[in-house]
Length: 151
Image 1 (tube, rainbow, N blue to C red):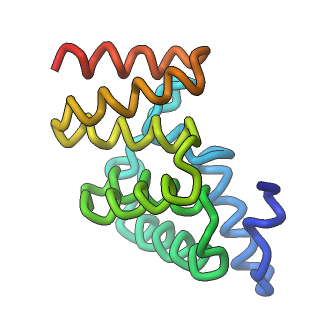
Image 2 (tube, helix red, strand yellow):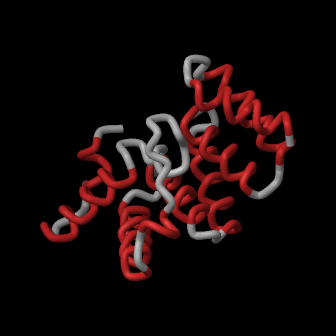
């Protein structure tokens, strides 16, 4: 999906720039927040103020309203909700993203990390295994799988 598709529908330049900034903050594919792929594990709970969290949620929900079948938006919502300890909402967002593309390795990985944080090691292990078959060159996936195996 092209970045332009994500931003389609935003007429207000200020909102568009804010969403682009949010996308840059979350990483091009939204994975960097909870993964350690690039050693940029960012914790929204400690890195953002309450106002920033509300703004982040507002823009993600706005993006979802404009692009309800956008895998990246659903995955980013899952990441966001996971980081702010809204587990049920994170679960729904990740499941919706996987409904859109059940073979997306980034979403599978993020969901596995979320499950691991919930002490659901067996489920996390299953998703890490799926991810390793789809993206075997990703060392973070193997690290996550090893951690889930120990749990």
